[in-house]
Image 1 (cartoon, helix red, strand yellow):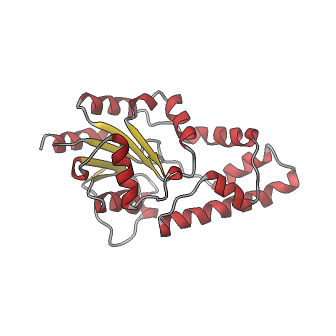
Image 2 (tube, one colour):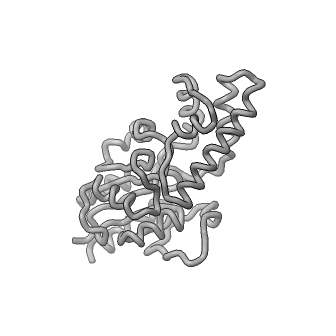
Image 3 (cartoon, rainbow, N blue to C red):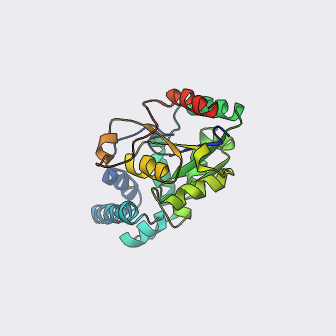
Amino acid sequence: MGVQAVIFDWGGTLTPWHDLELADIWRTVCAAHLPPDAVEKTVAALVAAEDELGRRGAEEHRSATLAEAFAMAGLEPTEALLDTHFETWTPHTHTDPAVPGLFAALRERDIKIGVLSNTIWSREWHERVFARDDVLGMLDGAVYSSEIPWTKPHAEAFRAAMDAVGATDPGSCVFVGDRPFDDIHGAKAAGLRAVQIRHQTTHAFERPGLTPPDAVIHELEELLPHVERWHSA
């Protein structure tokens, strides 16, 4: 069967990795919409909420939403605040320039293209990003953990992504991601091949005893030869 589908992580994979301070993002958002004396308290509450939801995802593999983060922080966001939040993230969400060419090459080989992202953002926000960068129409399916009960590395998250692209055999699917546990170990445990894209912060997510990837790349341009080798096997 060769390779039926290639499924990609989003942040740090389809988008170049950015080392960010979450508090700085929230401070920019809150300063534009809240009274000055409420900014730092609200920022701290939002960071704590995201930290707890991140812990829940990492340790319990349970998903979360942005609405939950706001509720935990005691903030009811306005549409204007949500717009500012999206725009504040915009410099850090641009799709890697290699993606359109890579996607086109996969489609030429009749390989399905999917996305599986651990995210608290909505589908609508992610699709705005992909549409802005002219790649939304190249996706055959996408699963965002904000829409399902699980996060990677839960096997059901990977099965949901396979279903989204119409893939039936995990052995014919390749997952591409940057995180050794969520992406690589999770994909391998679910029966998929896994390619790790390494960046300057990858080491921060490493832990002993994880399943190694089938291939390691440093740029998305390096992916296609691996896929072609497996596709022709």
